[in-house]
Image (cartoon, rainbow, N blue to C red):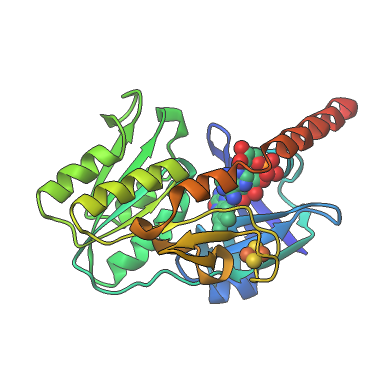
Length: 279
Ligand SMILES: Cc1cc2nc3c(=O)[nH]c(=O)nc-3n(C[C@H](O)[C@H](O)[C@H](O)COP(=O)(O)OP(=O)(O)OC[C@H]3O[C@@H](n4cnc5c(N)ncnc54)[C@H](O)[C@@H]3O)c2cc1C
Ligand code: FES
């Protein structure tokens, strides 16, 4: 059981949860995640460790409500409620060392997982340029936190409602053209990570992405999270979730992400029906 201490909608459809998880908080490292199950019959939801406080024994999760389980979490679980089980930290931590100038790109809900990585890279002595992007102004969050751990923060929105108008790849390309970049981290929608990787490859600059395939056990046993990297099969939960972006088979990754869309839609419809019954 893990108690929810605080929950808040931080932008449209994205919630921050602070939960009591002292053992996870004492071991957490940038790049890792946990898997939780809301109740006895709940499915397992992988979520990145977006922040943690070992002294308080808490971890911070940022959840975008996209389907049945995440919607249930934000709609039916609040302060004081208990989450049935929480497992973590899972996955390999980010390889934090002194690279020089690192560009950290966070897109959409990917802004949350990029934050602890940017913080750790800054603490390791790197120059950190962070690019945070979203479709619209109301989908941006944690800009103050990102600003505090970055030497430079560039914000983009697709519609120009805040910061620069355009995609995150545009400032990324400009920084690469200026020869200012030694390493890149990019976390966000799969398509964004794919195009950041293609851009980085043009300039021969190494890029790390964090893959978010469907997961079940999170410990390397079920095989559902398999991805192809440099022509080899890897399990994102134990070999990742971070991989070299230029070596990922993106077509396969995108196809596997969409594999259960029909079932996901049915599960959401069934959940909505139970919500209507409650009203
Ligand atoms: C290592 C890892 C870390 C993650 N960290 C976060 C995080 O910090 N915050 C957050 O909001 N989400 C995160 N995710 C994604 C999150 O786990 C899924 O959005 C969630 O499990 C979807 O469950 P659902 O039942 O609500 O939606 P579903 O009904 O399962 O899916 C609804 C929609 O979301 C898409 N989807 C399903 N699973 C994923 C996925 N793994 N990644 C992206 N899209 C997916 C589906 O294709 C579908 O369109 C992470 C995933 C992984 C593997
Ligand atoms: S989630 Fe089962 S092997 Fe990775």
